[in-house]
Length: 65
Image (cartoon, rainbow, N blue to C red; front, side, top):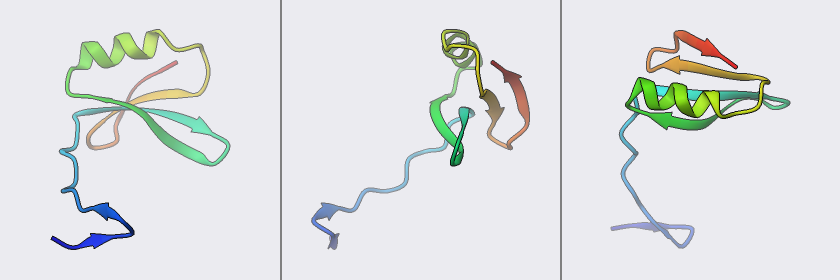
């Protein structure tokens, strides 16, 4: 195994079905991921109203908060 920069190589994480993105000053940033739609919606509902979006794995917008 090759180490780069002192960190051990790890395989890429399995992509999740749903992502919550925050539309910050630097552009969209993933702040939460889930494979359960209801769990993602519950997480989103607990955030303060602002610039959050729930999107599916293909990038389709499902909800905003």
